[in-house]
Image 1 (spheres, rainbow, N blue to C red):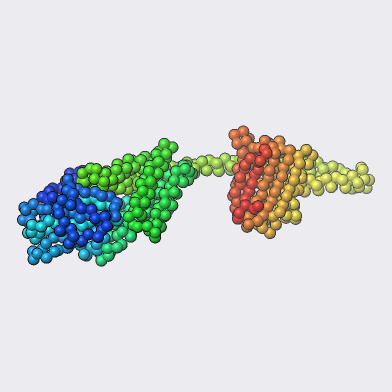
Image 2: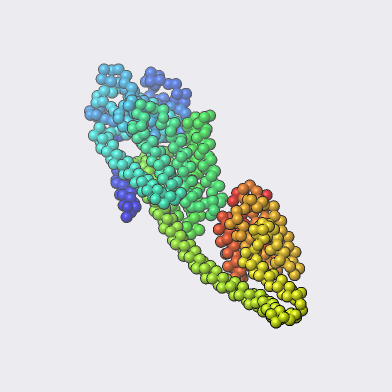
Length: 606
């Protein structure tokens, strides 16, 4: 509900701003401009120039874009303007330095300063806007002269206000700015709270992005000069490139993580990394290039970031990523706002409150939509988590049932071996020993009794070995694997080979039985299901890790055609690998066949 309130608030201010798009101001002035390409002209030079040296402006608007030239404005006021207090506003959203020259009451030349590059405490009016106070009757009959220059684009829309109307416009702008920053700060606090609660990286990167966006707009609206460094005029242009680069980098990183471009869209992910690298290089060029060039480069990078973001969001939307629909709406709003602001900056359309603030309206709406998108992603992840949990629970239940079946089967097999083999030999041994109790010679003599007892002992050893291989403790894992492979391939045409180069000291005792059983299961699968002709077991150690591999040249294990027991065998191997602290991989073997690999700790041995 809170997010819906944000959206309603933003839409309400859009309507309010549209109603205030053209605040009433006087056009009682004639303006002409003179370009000073060298920047060396002084007020004494300009005041003595003939009026025809200046080029008249239609509509009191002037746009020069990024330029190294300074410009002089010659302003003639109509008489009635001098009857009361008036304010001259240059209408430039960002302007480094503006100087107004006029005659005071005593006839002396008065100089007023304004602009971002002028300390707030030294400005003609205590306002973040580029404006000057015109004292009533203090200008005489001489025109006003204004000199403007700086590294920011020059885009002027001169307005004359009464002092009362200028104060009202200030109040409205304060209200709009309060709503704008309120939306962003609330979105920042909301997403920061969620990030602290769930530790999702997407929220963390988005919080960083919002914080830098807030800092950038505070700089662009002059709040940093007013509140943080009122006595400095040099920090504004120094900080701006870093903030623009920070916005581009954090926006790219947030969307890389949120949209999972590294996995889902590798090409777009490379573009995101490219704009991040370009942002760093753009800031680094401050050491060798002027601030004007750096700003143009970084603004181009910011535009490229927006275009790459649009491509990534569209690709995610087409791929069925539902939260991307909110981001898609934000892009639809942002791109027109950039176009509107650019056209106003170039002088192609009439400057207005909406044109000057379209981007900020879109940024506020973007904050709301991005919060919706993040919430949608969390809901999607929660649904996926529950589905995975249900699937895991079902798998665990199947594994438990199959494990019980395997245990019962092993018990039946051991019971059968005890009854059919060992039990029969014990009966034969008893019958051969009974004549001794009657003082008679047993049939076959002592050799027969010895042979029967040896068979019974071997059968006991075989049953015990099946339950736990004795070679594992007596000879070590490598020898136990070799003996297991030799026994498994005995009486067949399969060629078996075991290579063990890992020292037993590197393998904890509790891990050896897991590795042994994994190899045993892999060999059994190769013989029974893959019709292998060659099987090789390799045990290697190095780099703090252990690797066990079982390779065969058979047909491999089919995922879809595997029997229930075979499927359980693979699941059992994976579970044993997990219990041993490692991972198991089943992959095709070069030249045909299958390779089962278990890696525990460290790097893969060479």
